[in-house]
Image (tube, rainbow, N blue to C red):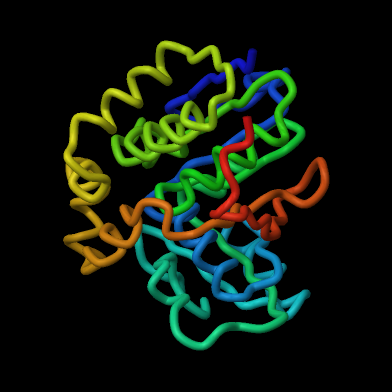
Length: 248
């Protein structure tokens, strides 16, 4: 039986040790944007927590630099944290550095052997990848917003958990997992669920209402950002065949 736990905020230290797989969720917007970037053709994404470190890494590697502070791109960045920036002509053979307020720190806190980035746009794909990789347990880590739990991440976790149970895997869900599934089910659709969150309202006020709609597009992508190697914060693309039946 696969043990599945959910943290509403990143927990530094030994929390999460003993799980094979961690799924980090920052649905508005880092994990949604990272998924869109890989779909757009970026070959790797380095997730970095601090702006100065992100600038230095982009300069050293020649990668494009994206991210946000208070929802908007810092000075000198190539772009912000909007998934809509990664549409149109594909990018070929480029790396990117992604630096965000909440999601980057959650990635650094993930302690499992395999770290995946999950969102509503890849809920089924990330659930199937987690089941394929896990022997003992899955640890879902919500990024939260400015150190507080964020309803948008809970909604996204509920959709990922629903997809995980739909694989047919035998799972032991924590009470927090059950709460997240109930929260997701309380809204008629993902976009409505996201709009209930204060963080979504903040993004709308900043002019990013279309980002919230994009983030609620269930199973738009059949790919998963997956950490390369057993440590670090570099992510590549793992593709899931959408036509294959569930794994178990």
